[in-house]
Image (cartoon, rainbow, N blue to C red; front, side):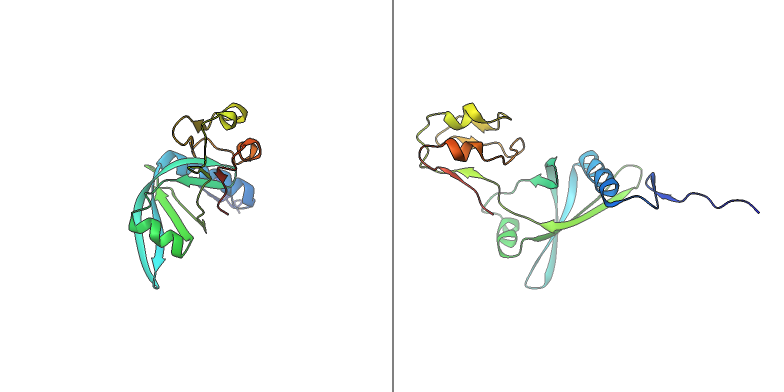
Length: 155
């Protein structure tokens, strides 16, 4: 009698833990880049293709404009499902809650202190300065140093 095969899914053993599964899922999502985002409005599903901007820690970053219907759906119901398939037909899907990223308000006086303390060079000069969300670690150093409390955290 032959021994049973060690079954695996996308290269992971069946005994893989959550951290290993998440690591592979995020790697697949970074490879795919253009992912299907599903939301709902009034109990009706809506799906669209959104470009993945970045993945850091447990967070997936993407952009949408405030005037788009997608943005309005996210503000009303933050629950999303994200899926995609790579060229080798390996699919990935995750679920979670969307939240708005940090931003700098018009109270910004352009002193540049936030830009100087940012460990990821995520703050760009402008009027007001702005946070490049694809690089931001959400460490809060910019908020702590801002003399005008112009950095807003949306949680």
